[in-house]
Length: 112
Image (cartoon, rainbow, N blue to C red; front, side):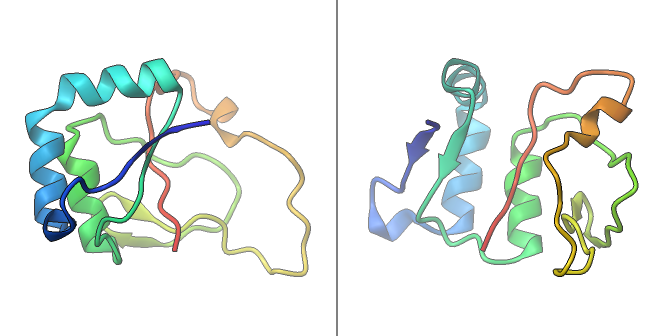
């Protein structure tokens, strides 16, 4: 189970507050990801690709470029769609990162 982080103050659930918190606590956030294997950011007003990109860039991690056969569309800066294959096609369990020649430690997933 991931560590779940929610805004401590309902007035500070905006993207600006989240970005500021991540920028000011990068080492702690990295430690929490390592300790918990995942961190879920819940309840923040991150509702589009521009906001999500701001959160991703606040962590200052290396940019990971997708390598694989799934059709994906570039949305904004470091943000790409997941899989745009037809909904009628079953996606079997897989891990496309085996196609890259180096192991990435961290990545973001955004869901609405």
